[in-house]
Length: 207
Image: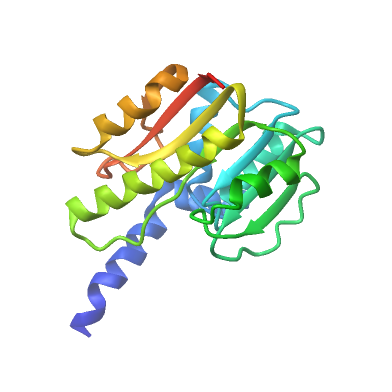
């Protein structure tokens, strides 16, 4: 019985979490939906008619939010190595593929028929519990997302990516800054206060 207490405690904490309960009530697939919703409410980087790619989209909470934001004239492509439950939204499609696959940028451009307006990335590694390793792996994923962004984002487009705060973050920001008119660090209210999770918003991409 003792061995199960940590898991039980985690489940109970999750159930008490305001945004987890809100997502359950409002039909979103994850509490992460509110992170994107809050960030976009503040900065308005996803607009009606936009073409958006969502890297690391499982289980689909960001797809649900983005579908509403872009409207029927917009298009959303979710990308993940994991399958997701069918989302049944007319402006959303899904591509099951590893983000490390070198053919991915070509596939994205082929699906949309042009470069996209926004690249979102909520990619995250399987956490090992060793902070230096987890942080480094997260930054590597953010760099992968940025590599895809450079090949698929239109001029003056937007990049929104999850990172973990730590020693490699400054280096990552320095790497992407020359490619954007503006780079901001965000922590939406839906991100847990104790979490080192942050989001980088790059606007005004220089193609």
